Amino acid sequence: MHTTAMHTTAMHTTAMHTTATSTTADLAQLVGLVEHDPAADPFPVRALDAVVFVVGNATMAAHYYQSAFGMELIGYRGPDTGCRDHVSFVLRSDSARFVLQGAVDPASPLADHHRVHGDGVVDLALEVDDVDRCIAHARAHGATVLAEPHDDSDDDGTVRTAALATYGQTRHTLVDRSRYRGVHLPGYVSRRATLPRPDMRLFSAVDHCVGNVELGRMDEWVSFYNRVMGFENMAEFVGDDIATEYSALMSKVVASGDHRVKFPLNEPAPGRKRSQVDEYLEYYRGPGCQHIALATGDILRAVDEMRAAGVEFLPTPDSYYDDPGLRERIGQVRVPIPELKARGVLVDRDEDGYLLQVFTKPVGDRPTVFYELIERHGSLGFGKGNFAALFQAIEREQQRRGNLH
Ligand SMILES: [Fe+2]
Image (cartoon, rainbow, N blue to C red; front, top):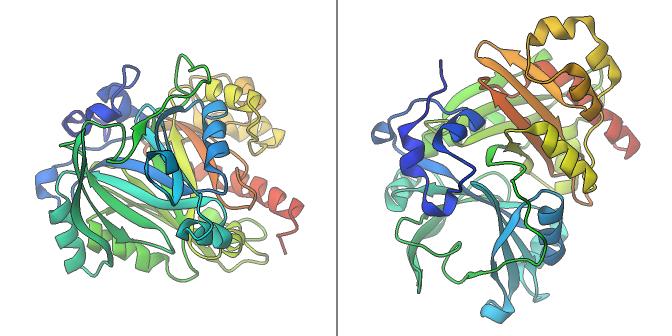
């Protein structure tokens, strides 16, 4: 009953974000949109504009996200286009857009960032209609404005942007690209790869981006998104929801008005051993983006292709599928259980429907950033029924790394 084909998506999807394989109705189903009146919203957000990473080698990361995640290289900026400091590659998969940045000049601030944090997310950029209005609201509610609203132009038009600080060294750049027809932002050039382009994308949108924040500060960050950005509280998981025998965490989810943008926020909770959030905070040297969930219409194909390309997923024990209570808990789903079992895909059902989900191992050198694939069938949740199985699987990996103690 919450899921509707939103008028907002059609209006809010720019030409840059639209492809033949992603229709408005698809997107509403894929990411679980709800009805919303942007006119009554103090900080109306159209969509996640881009996930911006700093990595140790953007040239090779761009190859990885093409060859292993099936993304398409569309844009570039670097020394040969006048940016002396760093290179930046823009990739997309339908409406999901990643920007991969790496230092060229050793004196680049990106090199300093990478030495401290390793590969990670520096910016969860948001597409908005009115950058100035959003910044005025944010400032009045206590936000730190990192960049004042300003225009940047090139031959393809003008983009208005500004930036807000959020947890750790992460920011939200606000982007109004309504007067721009270029490939990404002024200064970027169109760039294609020599890799063969897959016929279909493996995922179509970013469903949610999870932030790990400091012990005891989750509620502050929830309040930040409530006050500064008008996000509403969607779900929370505390106490026994996310606790194993050894470790625990707490999580609350904030979302933009139509739930197009969803930010779960985790903090570690006291447990007998160090939690996955503690491990992240140690290796990332502070709060940051923990995982990015990618919305797919065909999770089996996505897992098969990504596995074939070398992506490692968290294994799910056979006992998860052999549990006699599983069928009762999940009801009828579109895929036979043996197909899910073969790929370690988890299932969860709530009052609105069900979802299929699976998690990669961390994709970089440090045990920090990883990915989720999620295929929603009505469910607007995050897989609460799978938390125990998932966190036990994460703990087995933590144990192997010598970080569960
Ligand atoms: Fe998730």
